[in-house]
Length: 309
Image (tube, rainbow, N blue to C red):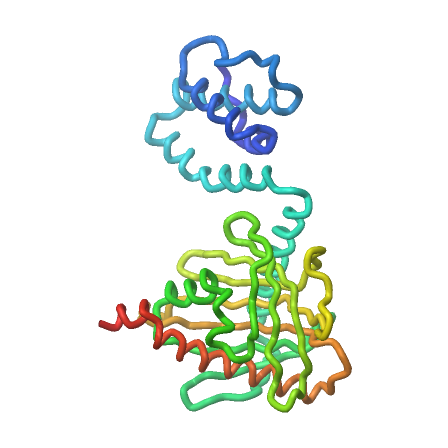
């Protein structure tokens, strides 16, 4: 039997197979029996092609291809890709659009952070916390918080991602965050209500955003941007402001993995008729306040206390 050129064809056809059909394909591919475990007539079109293509290639890898250790490692390397393809195949077109929007926010935000030119200091504290800013075409003014937190990255990830909806309990600038929908493993649609600013300088604002959390090696990126969600139209008494692209990058501090370098890129359109001087002051102060509130939260959390023992 001649092997197929690569797994690219098989992978391209994975979305057309259900998990049930895929399990039969895998069982057939390692069998020496000449017939399928059920007739091909029950499948049509691309599903039938996918079944044949995948089973032929897997059989070749078992009986006629490289040694077991090599093809097993190949399958393992592709397992995460296959899993994501199967997951995507179960998503609606709208969900796929949200996934793509989350990825777009991540790529745009990282692109902004990767360019070190043009950043100007907004404010800096004695402990090293600082906020920088720059003006970008088609985006406007963006802010960049740089801090070091005396906790491992995993602790921050759990607080900022897994317990996202509890942020209103410890960050006075946030009234409420609610997850409206979870899509796949790492993407969510959220509704965030901002707390009123002192003196009500900035009136009530709310946000609907798509957010995604991605791990890249030892780093973690939390990205997001504004989106439309039919189940959460504009609310009475609130101005619908817009995030994005925005992100937080978490990475272990070089030479000391018990500390985390946190970078927060904030790009936001508060809408309404607000002077730029007020917006700039509010946003840079919001970032500085966030660092303080996060440290206080982590210092009081049971997980952080256990690590310090």
